[in-house]
Image 1 (cartoon, helix red, strand yellow):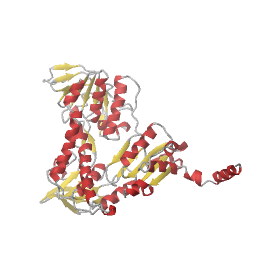
Image 2 (cartoon, rainbow, N blue to C red):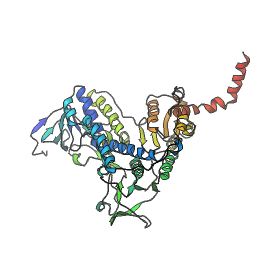
Image 3 (cartoon, rainbow, N blue to C red):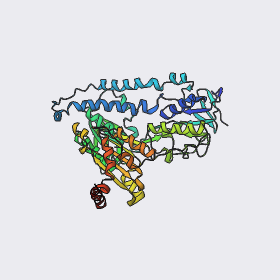
Length: 484
């Protein structure tokens, strides 16, 4: 059996967590506060991708861009529009300031204060029950792989030799791009594309398939119309044949021979699990391109000492790569690994949001997915923001709420596109998680005037044909009226 020559000390914790992103930190914090001994291993930044390169900096950038956009969008309210003066260095300082404000919560000092043994090094398996890191051999009762994911770089000829940005480097820019080409029009590409456009950058999105291809096409059309209206160029169904450096930046050759040039290239073509350093073969841990092969309880199918959470988990339980999913996975693992209770990771109630303007949020299957599975047993109830009084007052009437309803009124899913969609989708996620039927949402008393009324009205629309279009209901009402 191979051994790291530098490994001198042997640690025997209850739990060894590899990776200090959202999932790993949640497991470590929960476990140690419940009395378990925990070793946490992290070779990169505490807080992982979300804090340092993903959710947090992107939303901070989006917030700055939204302020800039609002300065030129006041005419409808009687406020004279003005051209924003963008101090890009100050914008990026704001982004870094937000990261710095959150970082102490995820810091090594905080977790050591909780009682976690933190090792700042890259971990690798020595055997199915041992990991080496920081000059130590860690022989834990259970291991949790929480290493997250990294940007996927497509095998385009010349791309590896061409300067390009990813979400891990774009927030380090100290000057704005002149013209930003974005390879990929998923959530990352769409969010950053709109943000940079609002900060004065020319932006072109290039997508081999359909932009926001996982989402409801009717909802994505609302988002893409908004982006085009702001001057973002969007190409769909276009493949890049080659990439190369150009005198003033980068040049992409599209299939068919057309070329496009930009000062910068951002690759936002998906994610891949970060497992390369772990030597999973030595640990007897099976994995594929989607992540560690796990069962419904997030436990490795080949090494029962090992769990995987978040982006590192493959299979159905690991198909939704979001920070909130990693946090949810942490609870499943703690229940199983520490409390020895049955636990399975569900996927039907997991919401997802694209933080464009307007936002697009989804939980459960889209309308097309639900109809493909259940056919005529699916009904769709909807309500447009154009008929919501708060949306009218704020002149944010683009979008709608769509509820996907199955047999016996069971809520299967929901799509919300419009202002504050991400804040509304939680209601639908709770309804699905709790097994509520559509009548429960329709019966909710929503404060007036709020955007959340749109969800209530969408649920109510499910009953409208039965209540207001039924001759039997009308006859019953007339009969009851005759009774006095």
